[in-house]
Image (tube, rainbow, N blue to C red; front, side, top):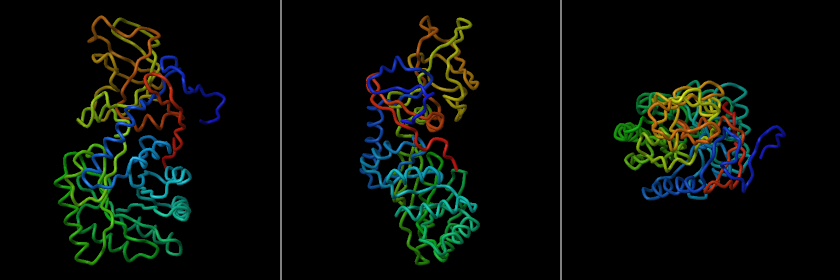
Length: 366
């Protein structure tokens, strides 16, 4: 754990009920079950699995994912990847366009330290910047990012993907590593069509495509429908959250992360105030109109967050309502952001703390 004399930390053997709040707590058994379930699905369908560590940012959890059978890891930014490389991970894919002298120099240093670094690009600007940096250094593998309907980064057509693949293939210091996409959920047919067409174009040009990387927890259990893919990436599945419950990927009993909070005020019969605000639960809505599920009080609604306070509407609850001083658990809308709000993560089994892990890559978002 971090050596911070001002931190309020837990230790193995403590009771969850006695912890200071707010803080996220992770159920060990649910965590292990989520890892096993997803790896089993990938193994069943012959897909390599590359977990995205931005969800937890903890090397010990990435080690558990790899021990279960995952092939390498997925990081979002260079600084995340540096932490995991220092922890001994060698096969790392960074799924972000990397631009600018400082980042490119850090990337080159990282590539010199590990054997399996890979990045993505969706423009000639990014590719040319990478080539200029790596022309006289150890070559870097680069995948072409494709927009197969997710509406974020990525080339828009198979023809554009081919053009960038050829540019990477011909560039000094670069190796064409394959294709990558982050699709919208329920779009397996569209993804398959885009990737299949692109692979045919590459084959016609004699360009080998070693990796075809599909992605996302929202698309996790339809990964087998994208037969062109060689691997799948997902992050949220390890903890799960309210958005994954809504998507039908899990039930509330599969959510390993809860945010433990204390009721600090009951100004009216219908309103409770907790000590978890936007600095603990995140203000991400992800299409919801409120900020989390209150475990044990299904009719309670977390209607608003300020920085330190959360407001819960109890008007639809029955006679049983949370009282001042009561500790409650909340399933957050978006677990990945919660990880980036805390220095440490408390793990427990049956309400007893088992370990405390540093969120080693917390705040490393560039």
